Image (tube, rainbow, N blue to C red; front, side, top):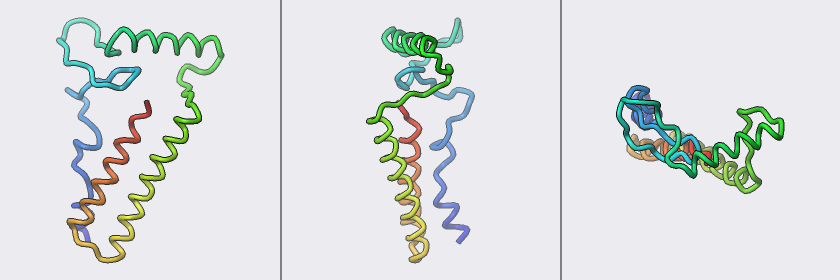
Length: 126
């Protein structure tokens, strides 16, 4: 049983990148930023358009009186997030069912990989 639990865990590098040398992502769109040199300030955005959108959001938040760390989602974005959470829950339930039915380690590993992918997709809110 312990062997199946160890096999079901995805590698640590799939879940969270290391802090040092970890890829940096755009503060607006989430795309990976190109590797830069060690001189100057670190980039926060992939381009001028993302920088502008972030500025517009900050100024709109200041005018509206919402806290700066507020997250505003449209109805469509909330529905998509709920769908992805449902997929993650279903994938977790699949593992429980497979373990109760006596699934082999290979099948459990595949199901655990599905959960890892679903969780990684959930990390991308934009």
